[in-house]
Image (tube, rainbow, N blue to C red; front, side, top):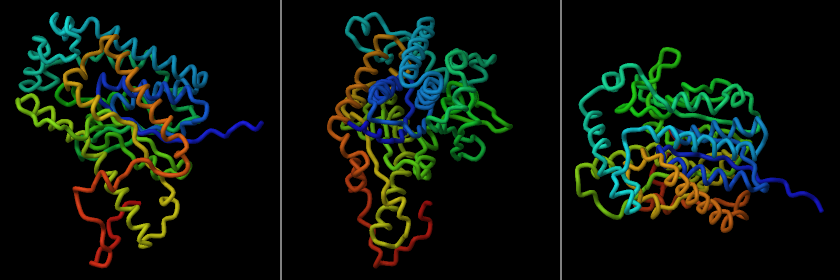
Length: 359
């Protein structure tokens, strides 16, 4: 009996602090499945860290090494967080609430970030996560990896545009630039340019994967809620919702461009056949991520991280059971539905042209 050729997929991994453990679970499930082969990964912030760990592991010893690398990385993050002054209150621990909204040290630190520049808060630039990443990931292995292409997005502070780092220029600094929240850390400087978190300009960037014709199935792993049923009622909730909208806006903009491109191809206004075959998919659980507080992105307790991992694993398992046969055949992410309330369908008879259509 002939061995089935694995289906090739691209992955787009969002950032989200400790919530990146959800993506750890998704990757764990995908790496277990010999029917799948990861061609490329585009990641931002925690998504970029997950991507680097996977590439390092695949280069060192294959799928098993990649899974062990993810487990080791997130466990090291949890161990480092044990010494953080920002911890849950005893009542939150007793009630199983992983939010830090009631933590006095979290509230104190949050107020300081609104008053002081990161260089004033942390004049020596101490970042344990950077040291941890440098210890756990061999970037020579990441850059040498030909099993998976890795793209890491950061935001150029000067221009406000996304900058995508890729092999063989990936480094600890590139990944830390992708994860640099400007209210918490000073900008990361690479080759004379300052960078902030990539979520402001691409969370994650899709175009490096879309422009690569070697794979036509792109799976977006979304860990930030796109919509919320409940309106914010406190100042913190307002700020958190603004941040969610901001960090999703770049992704929505790229999805809108892809949607327009598909419409133009269907209307035969563009002859770009390789884009016609591009298939989009989404692994996400809106209800579950909507229940997570924004402050829990800073909670790296092992019980919380493994709980998120298990949720992410469950998302991916359910998605694969329902949609594996769709890979290589059709899109399962309905862009028409996503943008149904945003604008009416494109009408080329009313003078719409092709200027400004993305490549």
